[in-house]
Length: 259
Image (cartoon, rainbow, N blue to C red; front, side, top):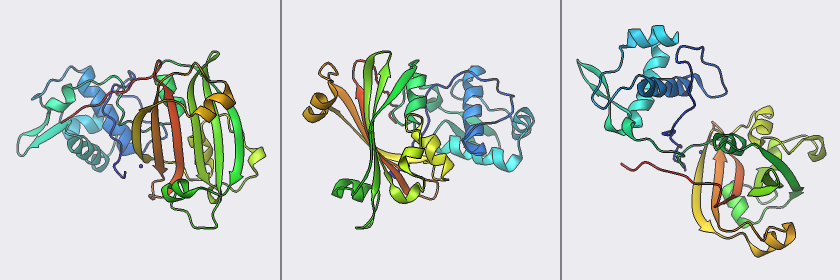
């Protein structure tokens, strides 16, 4: 969800490459990531040939059409290249290892876990309201539409490491607000309403927390922050979240690969 789809270029947790493919991502995306893991785990270097399609379909127990779609994604990411008549080969891009790629799209809960943080999610406020102009534009709302505003704080033990405000179109969630546990993953909540975001358009800047947020929530020690504003889209391209997340600079860093 810029519509530029966020590419997953970074390190992945070790997984047995021949385990069945089971998680919330699409099968093709799962397979793409498993092949990427195979390239790293097997120590393949730029210029090395990938296993054949027959070998990969047998290894992953997957259909050849799905495999070819996954290979196309790797080719689009410049992780592999094709020499017609010779096969597929590992590209120089695959050798780049970035610790925490800013191009990853994932839930905040997953992101903090990748840093090794087990956080507590504190809901500061939850309300239904008329959106201001920027929120309305990001969520492509009509004049009479309303939004759900969720204000939360992520704590590592007793230390606040993230301040987050999320806006969700009220039309997406039919349930009464107080019937929902907003302390969990927002993406998981939207999954229940068949509106889980799959991609996003994001903007990053280095800032301090707004003064009113500092005063209202006693966050005087928060310090410099990495602000990520993000519009998240469903598979159909419908905006379902506008997120404003302040990452505490002392606890977060992101990387990128340039080509």
